[in-house]
Image (cartoon, rainbow, N blue to C red; front, top):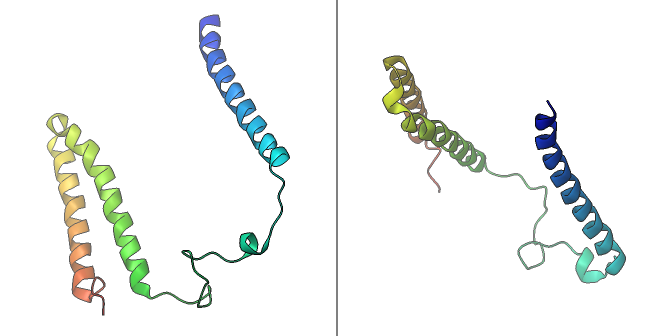
Length: 121
């Protein structure tokens, strides 16, 4: 039983040292660099030039649709990669469940395409 605790002790020491070093660096950064704001530091920063519009302006819904599509297909890859690694060991149920998953995603993509969500004017 002591062997298990000794292995966890190494991890605890590692995290303790990492926390201590991080804390010391954080404190030293506040001590060595006084926080004084001037006009440039407190001004709004937007890509290197002064903002020309209100930050609370509404975005077009298409931005959100593209972002959601990106997330969906990103998740698809995160499911597809492990599936492809164990494809030879899966049963027919595992194979066809992933084919169904891909078919549903493809139908969703075709629906978005037909609705014009991917077209910019």
